[in-house]
Length: 330
Image (cartoon, rainbow, N blue to C red; front, side, top):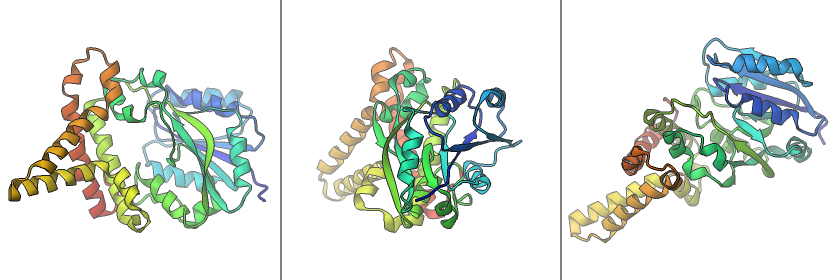
């Protein structure tokens, strides 16, 4: 049984709309296991730093607040925090997360008393009332996650055994800048011990960015697709067929379309091609069904089906590029 306590690490960058909610949800936790909160800011240009400094003045928890002058990348911030930690347990938590229940960290601690457990994760929840505040294109990105709860190791509110993190070489900052590092770590940790799916729930609020553009949606989709391709290249033997079909649904959909097209061109049999086209159309609406329902008369609705189809091919290209290169470049 371990007798160590918990350090919490929060990376920040322009999180003025959410950081106080995140910190307050930690302060509400009914536990005496938290020894320190480490925050590394990557050069925020909004009010994030001032808000954190003011919070620290009134907090009963010890803080180590590090302010970088320029971005260093998420993986490198994670690794710097791991090097600074003096406890055996580390919670990594993003600056747009709210812990739903006040006993979540204590539950995490109880789970990690079993030394065969190397990490534990929680269920992520996207609330409708938060999603409604997003700009149009941000709504599109998070539409498919709305109102659902699922376990997801994304370093947004997960607990790790620090010795296990160091044993697997921490986060791979050479291959993953700000995407894919979480899945890569999961697959390495699975070889060391148990990753427990806890009953804890956290709310992912997001940034409520007013400048969230179509370009940003496409860029983020490309970046995550490239990271997914890189993770597949580096850990392909750990994926089951079901994993592949769920994670790379867009790529399988495109493959189905290509096979249908080839069969039609060679044999003039159109059944598969028609089925593939139908699935493309279905995806173009199902992927953002809530945006269609709750965006009123927003004129962007007219181009959204075409954007959804475009994102399929964006995903195809960058998954392939990530797989070929074995790392995230974007």
